[in-house]
Image (cartoon, rainbow, N blue to C red):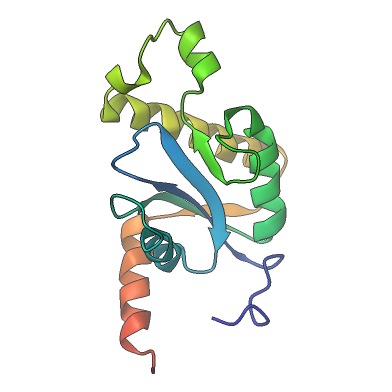
Length: 151
């Protein structure tokens, strides 16, 4: 899709992407097609195919993404990247977790969902128009639209 037709200040999706080989990290970003974005990121040399964990439809992708990034800045892995720890090294110390690698995928997923649910609760508290969209539904819509693209 053309950037001119879909500027980042317009409506679209905030996505939460994960890499199965790095369970304690996730990416927060925006896109009009999060499924395609995950595929693009998967082609950048990562060890496993990335997948969309959850998606939220919003009216202003850029502003919402920046707000979430600022809120979770303490968990940011690198200052110029959009990847975040589910449990930061500081939080791991507070939780008496010696090795974050010892925490299972299911527990980390539960904690990530708590983060995302807190974001959505914050949206409701300050009246940000949003709607969580099923990743399964979004994948189906992406696949349908891909069938009709001309190359």
